[in-house]
Image 1 (cartoon, helix red, strand yellow):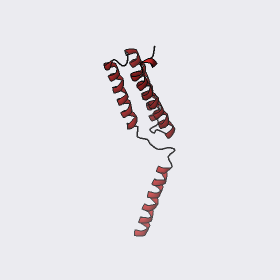
Image 2: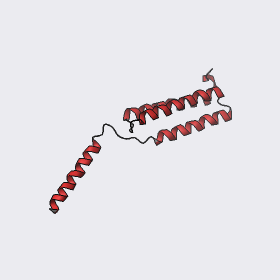
Image 3: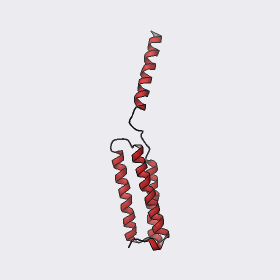
Image 4: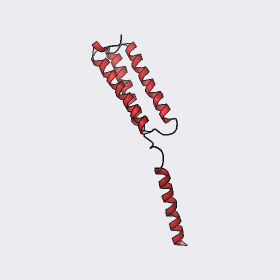
Amino acid sequence: MHTALKTLLAAAATAASLAASAQPYARFDTSTIDVRQARQEERIQAGVAQGALTHREARILEQGQRDIARAEARAKADGRVSPVEMRQLVAMLDRADAQIRTLRHDPQRRFR
């Protein structure tokens, strides 16, 4: 009976392990997305405070941040973030980084 119990427990553990690995996609930690967004928001506000960004430019950049937040919420809606969704979020953040950098450091490339 002791051996049968061990076998049963091993089978249950194996089944649980297989079920966990059979999920359609992994759960990604999106805390890095939130950290990057917070840093971008700080850069936008610093740009306004230093006079490197106009209020209009800041509004446009902040709209981009809201778009990223909405995309993140949609990705998380089913309780998981797929690898494709994660790549899309990272790409959005990369574009926002480039846009903030360009506007803060290249006055010729301003939004008019």
